[in-house]
Length: 98
Image (cartoon, rainbow, N blue to C red; front, side):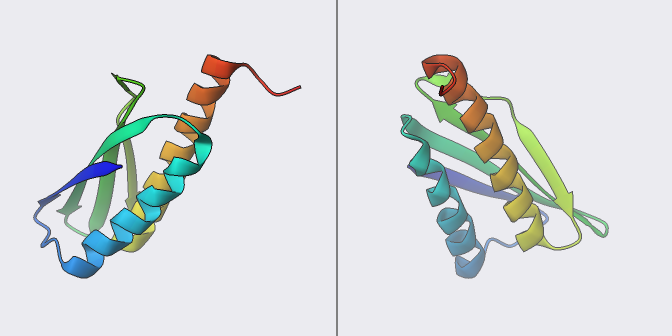
């Protein structure tokens, strides 16, 4: 999966880039054609947010935002929400398991 990572008032370090890449790699387990992801990290005061959009089967899923007091926690929450969105997408495309 190809992903882009942008920061708004955030310095994108190699460690942060590695954490985001590692977490996004979990999304490849659903058996769908996840071609790209766009992640934006932002610090606004004491709130740190991570928002992301996945492109799956040629269409964009809804942009999802997660906020936390720690950037790593915000990325974890974002990936959990993207995972749930991707799971719902695959169930709509392939039907619910019986």
